[in-house]
Length: 229
Image (tube, rainbow, N blue to C red; front, side):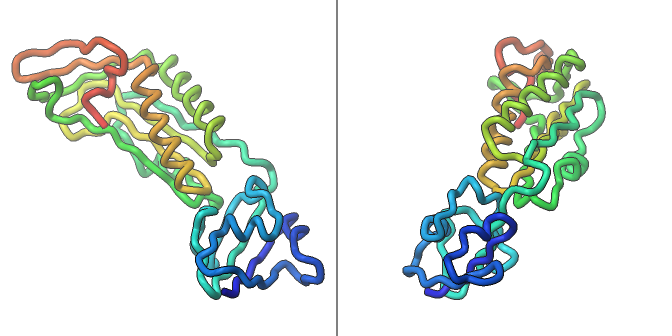
């Protein structure tokens, strides 16, 4: 099959001898992947920041190519790839997932993944009618930022934002919102899941459950979100 490859900025040094401009046409076996394409051109995958197919589809290296595809390869953007951290907020305000998504939006983002933790109507075999969250706010926001730094160390991310609500919340209301942007969806999904796991482990937020037979503060690790998300 016939594939056109466009190499931008300093990636054009990998163009085969005799190629002109920034593109080259290659004949590849059927069902080969972008990873195979990179190997044929001698381009290390860690030098490629973004991959676009036919000018619109942002792809992973395991994407299976088709005859006639145009693959564009982009190096990291000028200015580096340091992850933007924040805002990280803990307070009584309702979770605004739209604002969190806007905070992490970026032209280089191929994926924005969000998570909303909501109050459910049951826990430990009881009917839950209300939750009350209490936090040590200054420390909680610092811990959120530290979790964000951990995420940035493990995955290639563009931006991270989080918000946790305190006070009394009814069933169905959001207790936490997380937004993560990345060039590729896998990084964004994995980092978002990691954030929620770490928040349940270490964030200094406590939860009081109101049920049909009384109310009590829940004790134990991860209690602040055990009935949400």
